[in-house]
Amino acid sequence: MNRRHHLSCLGASLAAAATGGPTRVDAAPTSTVPAIDQPLPWITPRVEGPGLSFHTFRSEAAQTDASFHLYTPSVALADPARRLPVVYWLHGSGGGVGGIAPLSARADAAITAGSVQPFRMVFVNGLPMGMYVDWANGRAPLETMIVHELRAHIDANWPTIRSPAGRLLDGFSMGGYGAARFGFSYPELFGSVSMLAAGPMQETLERTPRASRVRADELLRDVYGGDQQRFLALSPRQLAEQNAAILARSARLRLVIGDRDETFGNNLDFHAHLLRLGIPHDWIVLPGIGHDPLAVLDALGERHWAFYRAAFAAAGI
Image (cartoon, rainbow, N blue to C red; front, side, top):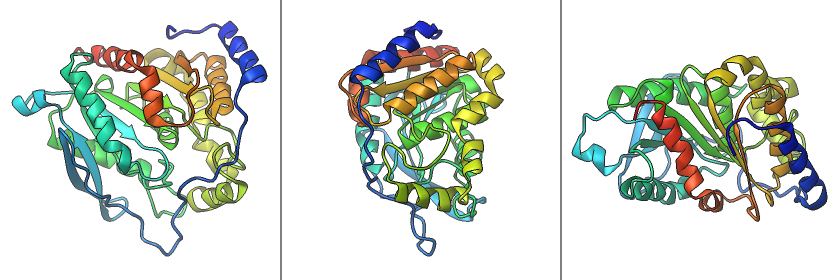
C-alpha cells in the first residue's frame, strides 16, 4: 500500500477483524520488571556474528555503564571514514539478546545482495521490561539514555549521517512501542519509524493482550509510578496527537501486524487513530502471522527493505 490510506481500507480491516480476526489472550510474558532490590541488567552477554561488535558507554543519567551491540557492514570496514545511516533496533520484552545474531545476519545478507543501501545497526539494551521510558522511580532513565546519551555516543565515535533522514527506528512488540515513542517525541532526530507488532498501544495499562492483570499492575507500578495518566501521557497515542502536524509533514512511518497476533486489535485501533490525526503511514497486515519477530520479517520479505531503501534515499544515499 502507498503511504496515504483511505478510510475504506480501515473499514475492510475492521470487518475482517470482526468476522475472522484473532481472539485476545492473556498470556503471561516471559519476564517481568526486576524487584526493587535487584540490580538491573545494564550489561548483556556478548553476541558474536558477522559484522557484530560489543560495546559499553557511560550513562550519566543512570550513573552506570550500559552495553549495546553494533552491526557494521563490510563496506564500512573497507572504508572506515564512510558516513552511513544508522538503524536503532529496539527489542521486545525479555531482553532481545537472542535476536541480535539472526537480525544482523539478515541485514548483512540484504546489504551484500544489494537489496538495501549499507547501514549501521545499533542493538540497544532496553532491559527485559524497560518500556523505553524514563521510569517514574528513577531507576531506569531509558529514554534519556538511548535518545540522548547513546545516540550522541554513536555519532561521536562512528561516521554517521547526523540528520533525521540518517536515523531509522525499528522495533518489535515493546520495541515497536518504544520506536513509536521516540520517533513521535523527537521527529527532529529520527526521520523514519518502523513499528512491528507494537504494544502496548492502548489508552490504559490494565489487562493487555500479552500480559495478565497482575503483570500489567506490576508494570504500571514500577515503571509508570502506578499512574494511568502518566502511562497515557507517555503513550504513542498521546505523542501522535501532540506532534501530528510535524509527523504528517516529515516522518516516514510503518505499522506492521500479523492477523493472528494477540495485539492485532490494538494495532488496528492505533492505525485508525493515526488516520483520524491525518498522519500518513504504511499499514501492513500479514496473513497467518502471530507474535514472532523473525516470522514478521520473513513475511514482509522485500517490503521490509523497500521501507529502509526509501528512508535512506531521503538521506541522499
